[in-house]
Image (tube, helix red, strand yellow):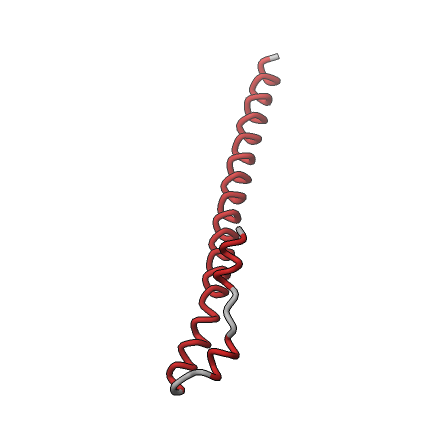
Length: 79
């Protein structure tokens, strides 16, 4: 984990001071935002997949409850 933090430590201000032209500066700024955009995309994907899983679970739970209640009702009618 420590290796990742050492790789991630980039001095953007120093890179901008040493930039040869404005296109390099633009690339540095965009490159510094890419990890955050990737993390946001990953978080949204995790959220949407968890939300779908919860909907599926609730549907199956309701279906099971209805089937169980129908079965209990049929058993009650035969008594």
